[in-house]
Structures are given as C-alpha cells and as structure tokens.
Amino acid sequence: MNIGYNPEILVAAETAPLLRDIKPPKEMIYLEWWFIVLLILIFSTVILFTFYRNKSRFTEKSEIADSAVTEQRGHSNELKDAKEIQDEKEYYRVISYILRRHIKDKYQINALESPTTMIIADMAKVDASNDEFKIVQSVLNTADMAKFAGAAFGKKERERVYEDVGLIMK
Image (cartoon, rainbow, N blue to C red):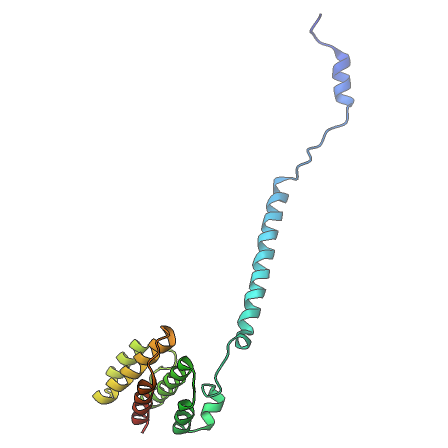
C-alpha cells in the first residue's frame, strides 16, 4: 500500500460542500440570555407595581381608624365608639391609633408611623408632663402587647386603658 500524495482525494475534498456548524454564534447566545433576563425583570416589575398600587384592596381598615371618618368626628366620640369594640386586638389597635393621633396633634410628633420607643423618646424631648408621659408609655406598651403578642388583658385592663386615654385627651 502506497500512502502518498493522491491528487484525486485532494480534488474531491475541494469540491465537497462545506459543512456548517449547527450551533449559533456566541453573540446570539448572549443576546438570548440577556433578552430572557430583561423579560423576567420587566414582568416582575409589572407584577410588583400592580400589587403595590392595589395594596389598599388587600388590607382591611376599621371604620373608626379610617382617616376620612375620624376627621369628621371628635376625639371623644371616637373614644366612646372604641369602647364598644369586642375584639381585643382591634380594640387596642383603635385605642393606640386615637392616642397616637392625639400625640401627633398636640406635640407635632410623627406618632402615627413611629414605634412606641421613638414616641416616648420624642415626648421626653418636647417636655411632656411626667404623668402624661407615664400614661402614654403604659397605654402604648399595653396596646403593643395586645396587637403584636396577642396578649389578653381582660375587662379591668380595658377600662383602665380607656380611662387613661380619656384623661390624656382632656
């Protein structure tokens, strides 16, 4: 067998059709990857925006705590209405809201959106009376325990909180 130069094989290789690779070019692979990531980002942004915009539909608000209703009535009427609430968590939530709004109006403290510790610290800065300071601290701590820890205090504690808030709002 003679392994040497064979011109017939060379001519056959030159006239054969070119084989093309079936893989896409690298630029195409990166383009598809970025396109998929972009679509995911756009889709998630639209979903998050929709939920954020419609957030008010998913949260229940008490009629007493609704700002449009509470602006039309006096503080004492709201406090009387709150006394009729049977649910423990809702009662302390409404009492806390009424007291926080009173503090906001009286001392110009951002009490509606601040935690209890910040309200107490801000009240100390604006020279609130010692009695009022202690009552606010007691009522807000009790309300926080009822709202967030689910503590049940009973009828005597509800009456004490009601009377304390009534004293402060005079």
